[in-house]
Length: 152
Image (spheres, rainbow, N blue to C red):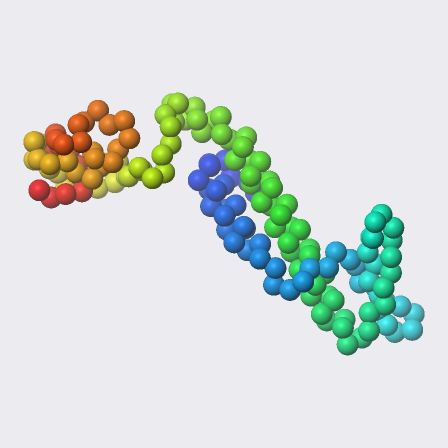
């Protein structure tokens, strides 16, 4: 699996895999094998010892599905772990990229470059960008003619 560097992509990939993590059928941590007489058996570890259990022919499809589900969940857990570790490693880089500013998801809004052609008149009431921008040098009650959401 290719691991991106940007934290937003890492979070998006991790969250997608967490949503997929629900079990579709009961997982079984075992392997399926054939017996000489035409039957099947599963081999698994129980308290550190290898055990073999006979599987009737009519349960073969269900047991195979359970084994595949265990493998799928194991693969997803491995990918979630890799993405989470990459997020932890990128934290310092991301913090330096922000210049030490705290990141507030609740107060985030797109910058003026995201909106083209809309401007406020100087002295009008605050636009959405200036009112919600964290640490904005512009007082929230006065807009100074920069691009904004409102057309007033």
